[in-house]
Length: 469
Image 1 (cartoon, rainbow, N blue to C red):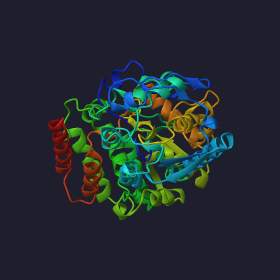
Image 2 (cartoon, rainbow, N blue to C red):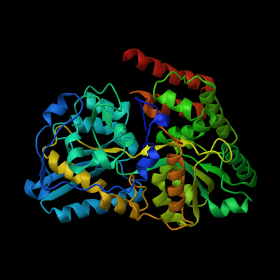
Image 3 (tube, helix red, strand yellow):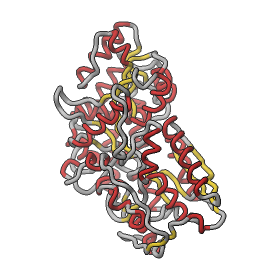
């Protein structure tokens, strides 16, 4: 879910038992080569959109005449914003007949406004759609997005991306079954949620980068005792609560249980692992480890406070690396993912950024798909990396300088993804889970509900979803 949140995912065989892990995925050096001028198209899966969008594909936007392409994204973080601007400029330079009209909104704003925009008489052509039931599934069910299987074949997305990443952007034509059926988009970035730390402040406390939850809690306590704010945290945007809970729950519940919870495979949100994670978060709030008035502080305010040296840690996604590095210096900032115990593989939420998708009512779907390919081909991935982002398919030449946060991010990504430590974002569980979960986290950490009530609230939402299917 970049800023996701933005941020990985449901149904089908569990991630841990898939033949090709996310890892093999993201670290592939495959090149997304565009097909020649025109290629036959086909659609896989079922649904009205599949039949509607059969036919030849034009891969040359220069032949489309004068086109205005309206694009909605949530790339508001410094690195993703800069790379998107650069790629848009390069696309328009290559195709002067195309004008890109960009609308960029925060993740929270995108979630509340995108469906209305897609349902309007004049919807955008290309949008970033969050994976899972709350957004992509809802849009597919309402026939607001069109399948891109024919474009995947034309531009070879179907072979450049491993099945695990492609599956996250698939839905049955009725929007009821995730990770199967038609492909509805492709993602440009990879992402994980982890712990950013101020190297100088960590050293001044006589501490090493935390490797486990126990290490992290020891550091939080020591920072508090020294008079330093342990953890910058702002949850007015709601999505940061998902990330903080997910990082802790991965360690208290374990990867198998988290996957079973999100993929509806028999686990209960009232289980001890989730209740323990909720207890940890409530205790951090009680002990003053978090920014005062955190439910009224935004994620951007929290990140800014951390960058200014007002705290020791920030728990956030890799999408923050570019902006923080610019403000702090890439060599003064560290990033790590936590493990259940020393020597174990780190486990945390992550996967890929929001999918770029073509809307059903786009008047220029072939130009829209060519634009998407421009973002995710080898050059697009390289430019994204140049601006400090983590590309979903890192080019072979991508090698961040040692000792920088970018090197830490790549190392953590490799460790988590190559060794089966990548877990799904929790809000993908049901169509209503994002709202239920974010509200419950706010109430929990404000002391308004108990950890047990927190788990029961989530289980009630999940039970309702299973009964309606």
